[in-house]
Amino acid sequence: MKRSVMKNLLVAVLCLGMTGCVTRAIYDASTSNEDTHKHMTSGRIGCAPDDIKITDEKTTHFPLQHTWTAECKGVKYFCTSEGTAMRGDLTCTQAK
Image 1 (cartoon, one colour):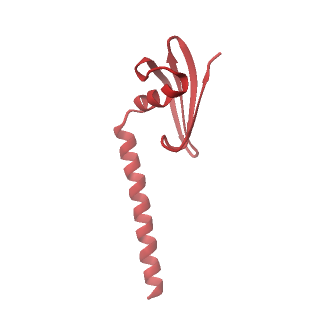
Image 2: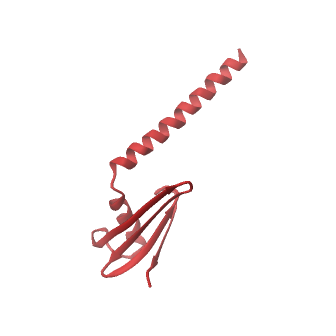
Image 3: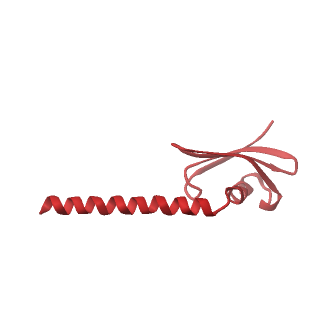
């Protein structure tokens, strides 16, 4: 009996975990990375999101990392976000 309860609990935990992954994938597919990156970059470089152009977006999943180039008023910045948008670290460095 005890083994059956543990097995059911494990299955429930795995199902909940997969549901979170699928939900995140659907969210990511339904939102524009460009818009997200404009808003994330805005506070780092001091330009309004509407004044920022995003190019060269790339994503790796292990580890989760997003990179892109942002341009505002003729100045380019290289940006990197590690982790999720809500809990990750974001750096933008002005291109030389």
